[in-house]
Length: 134
Image 1 (cartoon, rainbow, N blue to C red):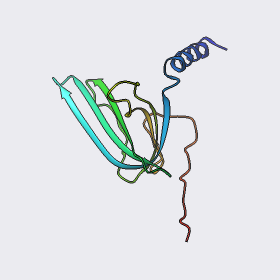
Image 2 (image 1 turned 90 degrees about the vertical axis):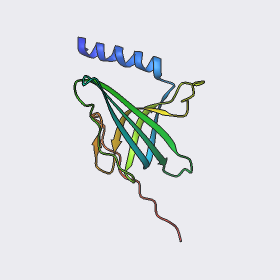
Image 3 (image 1 turned 45 degrees about the vertical axis):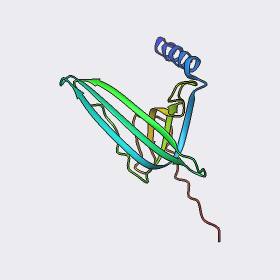
Image 4 (image 1 turned 180 degrees about the vertical axis):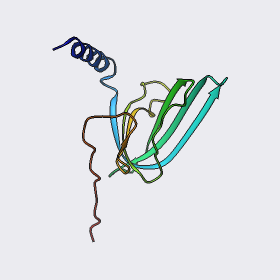
């Protein structure tokens, strides 16, 4: 194991130690998307995306927020529209805070258009087709 592998393992272990109990996923169809871009003094760009999804086989909805801040350039975001099927990889909100039910998005995989916010080596999940019984 080389130096680079040891460093990656060290960072992965510390991340799991800090956020391991809060890591979650949500898979379902998009009900609503709201993307806001703000600029402060032509230097600082802030992108905030709020996505509401309905998980497959469930009656409840999940609200999630993606925030990106960047100097000089616009932050990147993928195309997500109403009706798309997406997989959100996120962190649950801290218990006791006012946003404890809101997921903090770390990555989005759009299964409909087969795009990722951040590239992952894992294969894309297949669309799940549900047939109605007569």
